[in-house]
Image 1: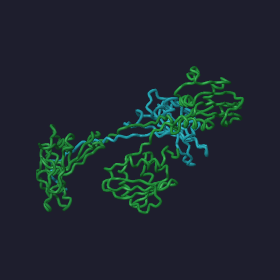
Image 2 (image 1 turned 120 degrees about the horizontal axis):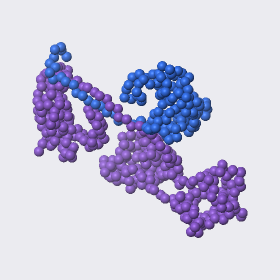
Image 3 (image 1 turned 45 degrees about the vertical axis):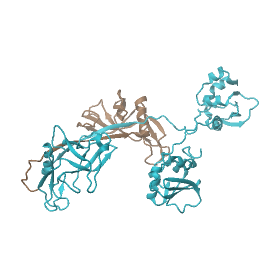
Image 4 (image 1 turned 135 degrees about the vertical axis):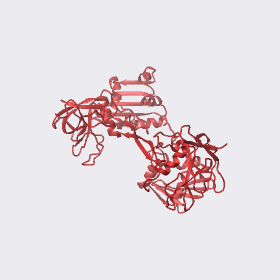
Length: 394
Length: 153
């Protein structure tokens, strides 16, 4: 494989058409250039929900050109390299409209490298190609050994390994006076090397033949390190330790008189806002001072309890609830609700009943959103959670 | 706020902030702890340039900035107290009941020191230069407390 990740740059471009997502291409009408060091340039053109990709000489008409080395480009595309990191470390450089580049991320499904099993011939070539590299000199000592491999079938071949003075050389053909000759079909040799079949089975069923020094035959596993197929190297079993701890911090919040008025109101199923004496706007939850006019706010007004949803903010990734430390179940949604008596920006934020999220419609301008009502906790303690959530008023 | 304001609505709310943490021991740290846990052996890493042996092991030599993550060497389970303090208060994060001795111990074969608990000698008798040996924990926890404590030789 030409690339570090076993995927060729060309494969990324050649599969773009089948990975293309028309829904991600809406409103995109541009050409994007790719310049991969040593591999050439490609131009991706997206228009009317369709795309073309082709090699190019000149990328002058592209809104943005991405430059990267082959390993980085492939790594980012198959998710093995972090794109942002590659960009900040200069492994990817971008020339032109960065914003336009962002659109290309939605255009394609992630490239998944095809799982290709090497053919028997490829295995044979790789196994003998790596034989001398797998040789273990300390196991050979000073002995002089000549091992012939007679691998039959169209995928096979004939090789002779000569071990002398602690080095191993491999040549094609069979030597005339070997210490040991192994003969079997290519497929059986591959299976043996991959551990799919054991030597005893091959010998007892006469699929393999050994001639010469049987003791040497027994030592072959020491003379040569175990064969690992390409792409599976360096997978090491390593126990990694992680210590998980939950740090719990006790907290106390003083309500003060204004927030206290609001929270005490919840105990009696009343929602209080306060009204600025100058600008007349409502603040919900109430604050001691008007955030706009910076004057003390004394007048409380009961609002709600019903209202219409202006904005629904759905969370799919839960953060711990700061009051309890528990992690919330997802999805959950925070809604900005304009309670009766409030207007403009005076929306109140609270949860929406989880099983009704998909039925909530948001309002805008004069259009009202879904009307919701608070669901009160049985036992109310003067907390925001005295309202469990809002539900559709029906 | 003016004095004598109406405090009838004031109260306090109890809260709790729970922060889940994952501490990764790192590759070098993991190997160090696994060896202590499974084989009751203490290993450090050695810099091939300046020959300094780090214990606990480090990935990089702090003198030469050499990568030393693969240069594992065994150090002895015995060593010398080079400094100590006596912990006399109790807290949830502390490993033992007070009073106990927290010592800086240099194991034979190491050039840096390990902080650990010394038991088997009373806090007013412990001295620098005291020879101690590791006592391994029966119940392992994948932490440095898989060495339960050190005791006088």
